[in-house]
Length: 211
Length: 211
DNA sequence: TAGATTGTTAATCGATTAACAATC
DNA sequence: TAGATTGTTAATCGATTAACAATC
Picture 1: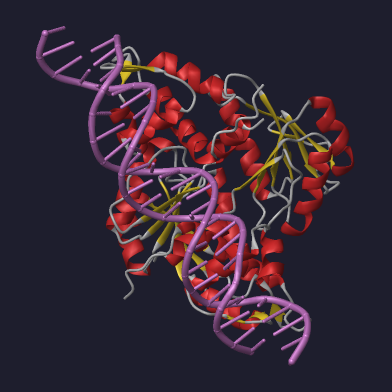
Picture 2: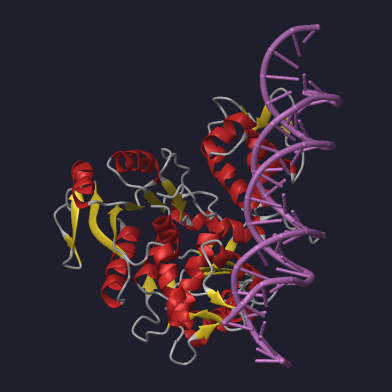
């Protein structure tokens, strides 16, 4: 049990490498070189080797990386070989679209690890309904109990900006360890909880600068 | 004509600062200190001063930053005081949700700079329809001509992963300078074009690592 | 003036790149 | 073996933090 955590740039790229080699047909060629992988990921070969070396020695000199082996190792590093239980907080239009997108990928892709188990909304007319005959919408009052009971560790937050901090506080208190926030607002989380942003407007503003 | 481009970390934080001071009431207190701004943005005061100093001297020693003045300066730096013409490529469920979200913010927020002018989809049953009685869906064949004619510089890509690269190629050929990609795939863009990713699955995979 | 806070410089930290010995 | 490619070390680059003189 080491408290070692790799830098997030490395983890992001590992996820990209995993996506790429998952699409490679290992029957065609069972090995891939850092040069090839780098080309497909849009980074340098040295970066690929450095990133992988963070977690071990996965390659063979003169040959490259065994695709099937590397795939399994990356999945193991990224916790992508087990189920990750998730909740969706806020079933507005965006939340609904993201929720259904997730359910569909979960059905269609074998080994898609993200398992959306519960949705929540303040609107009483939505509570009790099912999304795609599968995902139940609970009231906000039930949030703490459901999250604890179902062992939910990740939450996607698609509530209005003004409500986001309170939602985050309640989620983390109930045991959520990672949050993906779509609301255009800065949030605080307790130590040990990871917060990522998927804020469309912030991305657009960055793009606008470089015009 | 400045060939100077600030690092994207700085630009992202400037966008955050702008969002924060836009919510501050300058009648309450017309000045904000780097300490206060840092607290609200979740960064260090030194970072705030360094970021702002990249573009000029906006503060007064012993006093802080004039909120209204800083707001205008940040808007000017980020190109957020003029209209930015955008297109939406791919009107699936996610594209529809993002498009409508944008139209709504454009209506409700004065000075929201992003102007969604056209949507595109391959599905003939969607072509010709309007989204929220405002945004017309064009066929993919019309993409090049519409983008050039309307002066569209940013594109949000919400097509399936397999179609994304071709869409990007056509957009950039037609004059698009910035792309926000929602498809789970690595893309190549020509020099001078900026590409950002808003890939939910990649974010979730990163979060899963830190569990 | 005295207290506060900026702008800036220097020190630190961390990530990327380049190079190459090890070795399949 | 000869050629290829890894894992790793050292060099480079860039970003963050700390400290403080300038000055409102």
